[in-house]
Each structure stands twice: as structure tokens, then as C-alpha cells.
Amino acid sequence: MQIEQSYWTHKNGWIITKSSHLKEKANFVLVFGAIDLITKEDRFYEIKENYPNANILLCSTAGEIIKDRVEENSIIATAIYYEKTKLKFIEINVKNFENSYSCGTGIASLMGFENLKHVLVLSDGILVNGDELVSAMNESFPEDVVVTGGLAADNGRFNKTYVGLNSPPKSGTIVAVGHYGDQFSISHGSKGGWDEFGPTRTVTKSHKNILYELDGKNALQLYKNYLGEMAKELPGSALLFPLCVYGENGDHIVRTILSIDEETGSMVFAGDIPQDSTVRFMMANFERLIDGANDAANESLKKIDSSKPSLVLMISCVGRKLVLGPRIDEELEAVNDVFGDDVVYAGFYSNGEISPLLNSTKCSLHNQTMTITTYSEM
Image 1: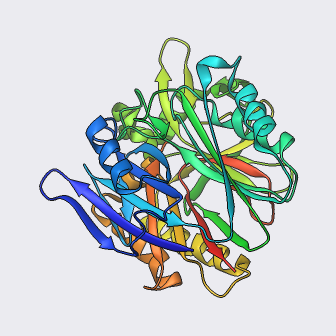
Image 2 (image 1 turned 180 degrees about the horizontal axis):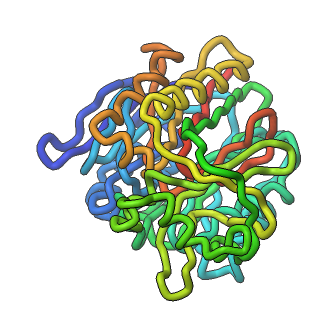
């Protein structure tokens, strides 16, 4: 497995940060870019010219990750040459399917399962219901296939996102990349780092990702009571106070509030809030968020079955970026501290993260987490 990396800015154009002379050899290029740049056809055709034989996967972001720093208004291109791993690329658009669940089953029906080890999924982050998508994939893929990835972003606008395969990216697109072979190695980790506060409550009225009532009370009003003066800044301030949803087995996932509806007293989340589930409010803790990134790295390091990964893919939430602000690089440095300098780092800030829960291979949609996938060949 060989990798090279470059990034583009208005000021400097393309700059190569790691060269492995992969122009003709690269078979996969992973491209993350700012919403206003990655849709430019010129940038796509420049990448295609640099890697004429590669499949090129593009995704819009809320910030681009390269090594231990976050770039904005840039494009990060990571070119990979898999020497021993078979790849399969699938592109679909949500408009051609009944719903997000059928998108997941459609991807699985096209993938082929023999010797399949991992599926990387990058999806539209607005038009696709991530919970339905991952639920379908969990039911469709074999249990030992690890699915990770994320939802495209648009720098916190929550308006329109873009994903593309071998063409300039488009809205509504989902791309899945299957990785096959016994010499391919993957590990994964996902952690949040938020503090829980207040009593646990029961969801007494919800529909998919819309929450109406907690313990029979108006959910929005209850939420405002906890926020106090910061309630005036909703929905923006909601990124500081996500919701923890507990699973039956003790696992929990974090859900971010995308918008509020004053008329109905409801809140719209970036993932489903199941009826009758148990939840608890959460709040930002800067040190714990950074520690969470470090924990995610260590969690994935424990699962590595080869000497060292070649690529560390980080997908973190736009909410973490907004909360950490000028300290955002610290969560990337915490990951770098675990894997060291002889590894290529890439990733982006997303509208949602796809990764298994701890001690599981079944993927879940996460919000407000740092998720890590490591890649290598043995």
C-alpha cells in the first residue's frame, strides 16, 4: 500500500505534501474539499489528470483534515495504490430510490460479499437519513464486514452537500467502496467526550429524527429551561448541548440538534430519536472532547492486526469543530500522538459519522464524535 497526498488553495494551487510517484499507479483517490471549491469542474479534472487510472471519490466538508491540522477553503487529495486489495466502487443517488433505507439495501445488492472486509461509505449529509442508511446496511452485509464513513457537510450551513465518483460531485449522492482480500487490514474507533447532566428521561413522543416530548412534557421547552440564557441563541447554541441516547445493551450514541420548531415545540436531530428510548442532556467539556479523540485513536490501535497502519482516516463532527473553535487542532494532535509521524492522516468534519459501536462490527450513525478508520496491507 503506497500513498501520496497533496492539497489545493486559492493562494498556492496544488502543493504535494507527500510524494510516492503514484501518477500512473494510484487506483483510489480520496478527495475532501470545501463546499465552494469541490464542485468546481477544473479541480476535478486536475485531479483526474494527475491520476488518470484511479477511481476518484469526492466529498464536501465543514473543514479538511491533513495530518494534525484543519484546513478551510482547501481541497485535500489522498492518492492510494493498493497492491494486494481488490476494490469495488458503487455510486447511487437518493432520488432513484424510495427512501434512505432502500439506498442501503441497493448498495448491498450491488457490492458482492465474497472476501469482503470493509465498506467505506460517504453520503449526502442533508437528503439522506443516515440512521435508515446504516440500518439497511447492518441488515444486508455479513456481520464480519466493517462499515465506516460519514455524511458530507457544507461548512455548517445545513443546506446542500455534495459527493461524487469519477465526476464533479452532486447533491443526493452516496458512494460506497468495497475492500476485498485477506491481506487488507482495517481497524476502527469512535468516541465523544461530552459530559452528561440532569436526570435521564424517556422519549414519550417522537417520529424518526423529530423529538416532541420527554416524560410527557414539551421537549423544546424542557430543553430551553436547561439552556437558560443560551436558549436565546438557538438553534446555534444547541451544538454545545447534544442529546445522549442510550441503547438496550448500555451503549449510547450522541445526537445533534439541527433545527427547532417553535410552533410544534419540537426539535429536529441529525439522527433518529426512537420512541420510548432513554435519553439525557449533554454539554461541552473541552478537555474531555480532546481526550475523546485520543481514546478513539487508542481504541482503533488495539484492533490493528498488522504492525502499523499506512493511512489514518479521521471523520469528526462539525459540532466538535464549532465547540472547540481555535483549539480544534488539539483533537487532531491527540490522534497523531497515538499513531506517530510515519503515517498519512486525512479526513474531514462532517454532518454525521458512521462507525461501529465499541466491541461491535455493526455500524451506527454518530453525531459529535471523532471516528477513526485505519488502513494497511499485510
